Image 1 (cartoon, rainbow, N blue to C red):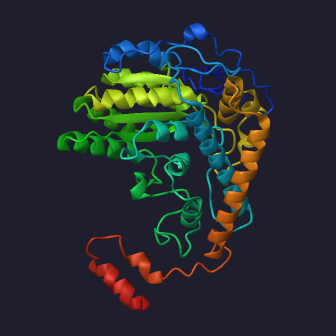
Image 2: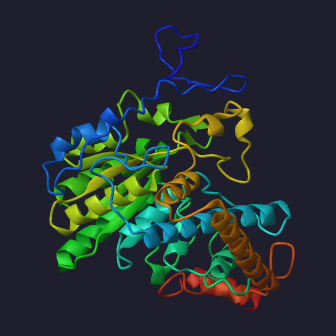
Image 3: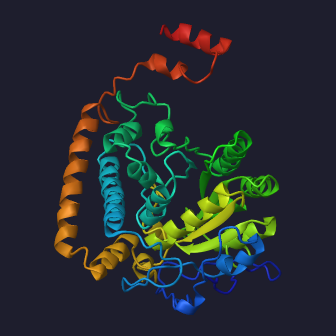
Length: 414
């Protein structure tokens, strides 16, 4: 996306501005959706610099009318597509329920992934369950796709007595070891370096696993991102570095972190890494890109940088009001549509789905999430006793408890 004319009073300093601000009419006609711009699928072990068209173009497989096109179509079975649709819808239903819980004062904080469900679900389905994910805030769909019970997700966000983390993490900083989901850090950016280190360890031990890291486009301006790319390049680590470009880093538009680069994916080329820019609202394209990158990693081709080009439909979090910095109607004007609607239309086009089935599935999932919520609420919320033993704050933090913590625990009499 381009930026509007610089309005700074400093004549020699260029300050980029987003295309639209509150009061403007969103117009994305500058984004070219022509199929001729879709790059072909190369061999996964292609020389990294030959992926330049893929880093600056846009990998797609699904047209907006539900038809498929080109070499990136993974040719998934209807059953697999229906499973993907179910996971994406479940993620959205859970998000809406958790948002409501926060507004009711039962939860302190939450971050939705609405508009980005295809990225998480396609990644989980394309990877092996033994591959380790180093997530950012909006990949809860990976957990649900990997079979983590919704009630456990709710318990962790509520920090109640059923929370297996014993209340040690703030809401949305999920940590689920048995689902290959590394602890989310509130200091966004650290997970990229951790993922590369994990991948290097896998290569050192000779296993066939890969690591998959996620970050938003804003954090690519941090040093952590560049350190991760450098190590991934030097040691040819089997890692996938995913940049979710949802256009907004809280209230800062993507052009601040992008600088003058043509895409976030193209930054990988400077480190000699294969790089892909993918339509993040196209489940088929995301699945195909992650499969391609994982095959490259498992066969010694090294890391891949994937930019998922998408749009954050709602606020950054429950603490954010996007109407203060975004034009009204931006989400509806986004030319790549809604990922759930696009996959639904594809299944309908195949004759494998209809609106009646869609409505029935939504009713079923809402009932499941409602029952999960009742179970989680019974274990305690922000508005009711959680019954967590205060002594657990000192446990499972250090291998050996430091002297000052022993003293504090004694002073508290626990």
